[in-house]
Image 1 (spheres, rainbow, N blue to C red):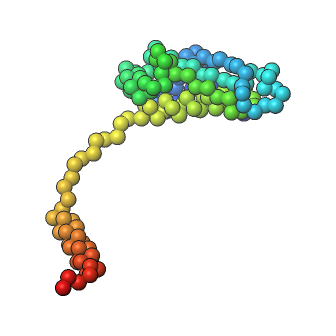
Image 2 (image 1 turned 90 degrees about the vertical axis):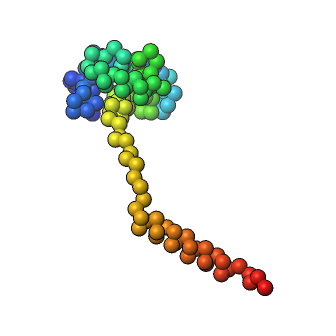
Image 3 (image 1 turned 120 degrees about the vertical axis):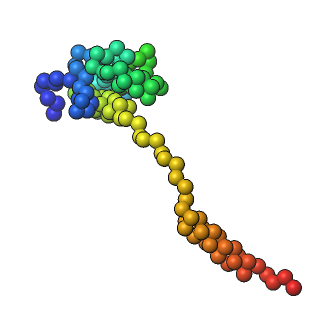
Length: 145
């Protein structure tokens, strides 16, 4: 079960978003729950303002805004969770989803690929294989007399 006291949302070893920057909205869920669906506000929306967050460095903020441009609305990330019957479980699911999304977006880009040339031996092997394939196909043709 969730911890009673949470210092914040831990995204990585270097970044933890304080609880004061996270805001929650609750509404009725359309998912599982039987008769309780009509009375319990089990759907959860977790909202975090990435553009105005004090915990991000300028590089992290730029990277987040660039990579999450399709998910941001005025610099705000919104995560909705309604797959569980209990509001607490949906809260945990939303927190995990936001942490995973941010960790993926903050990951440094892969180093650029270095162009390489095929070695002379590799070129010769490729041409030899092509010649063998040509010979095989030529032998399959009907004789031309």
